[in-house]
Image (cartoon, rainbow, N blue to C red):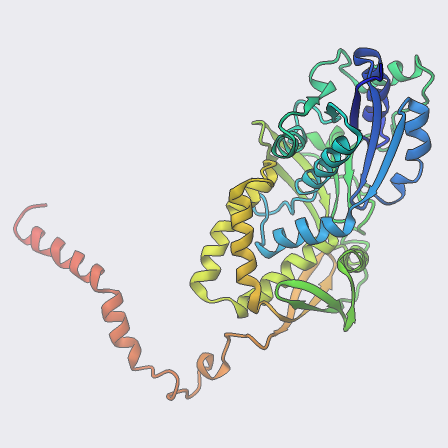
Amino acid sequence: MAKEKVVLAYSGGLDTTVIIPWLKENYDYDVIAVAVDVGQGEELAPLKEKAIRSGASKIYIEDVREEFVTQYIWPTLAMNAKYEQKYLLGTSFARPIIAKRLVEIAKKEGATAICHGATGKGNDQVRFELTIKSMAPEMKIIAPWRIWDLKTREEEVAYAEARGLEVSLNKKRPYSMDRNLWHLSHEGCDLENPWNEPPKDLCLICKTPEEAPDQPEYIELEFVKGIPTMVNGEAYGPVAIIEKLNEIGARNGVGIDDLVENRLVGMKSRGVYENPAGRILYDAHQILESITLEKTLAHYKDQMAIRFAELVYDGCWNTQLREAMSAFAESTQQTVTGTVRLKLYKGNVIPAGVKSPYSLYMEEIATFGDSKELYNHKDAAGFINLFGLPLKVSAMMKQKNEAAGNG
């Protein structure tokens, strides 16, 4: 009788390396490893050999980078969604697409379970499992960190070595890191104390502002209906444009964010994120929207962005509310076409110009000079009288009651 199959979200790190033999010993499963490429780069190269050596019967390495950009990053950018005003959601929207591919392969392979290596303290367990439940409610989910007896990284290393697997802890870089096309995150160790300044050698993508060039670099970004398409007059595809902006932003020290965030599971955590392309794109997109969106729409969209970011952070990508909000955001992007010029200097993204054929900014109205045909200064008096009428009536009522001794 054939063994039951389990699909494992595989990264090749310590946790998922140990999970393979643990699954075989505790469940007698046939383990199928799945590494989903969302832009981890060189981390993926040794995974095929490593997974088989660890005991997996098969490994899939799936390149979903373009789908990641067009179906997850662009919709989030369209909403200008940042979690708690700062976090650009790099890990948050990567987990749903990884889980989506896990489900697709599990169904293809006839697997009865999906396993992930997220800890019981983090957000990722929720993001993985909500996506799995939304796509395959019948699928069993195994989360070893919530049930096994291994409590420390050192115990994991000992477990692996006892089974002939070579693993080690990187004592020089002991941080918990997550990398994809959009960002690189750093958590743990000395960063757990928010009083500690991040070490100078922490960043692996970005130069620090101190190391960045002493001369600013100007770039021009072109958007079509809210989607970035060109950098400095050259057209790029979805993946390539992020790679290009990562390169430009990183050398100018752009996109390093140090924040304490509120996790979904109830605790605060501190992380340092490198998002060079993300910072450039968010700033440029917001600048372009400032001249192409009408006031009430822009203000309402700002309010929605807060809730949208919470949904993405909390793992609720596959919800009707998120989908409906994305449909709203897409409808707002029909006129968000134009060019934004930015000056990058030592970690700063400085506006240096914006233009659009759909611009609502009209110099003949905004000017302090003569613009009687479009705006007559005298009209403001009547507007202020009407706009201020509730305040005037309230003040008159107070005066009347004070005069009558009503307090």
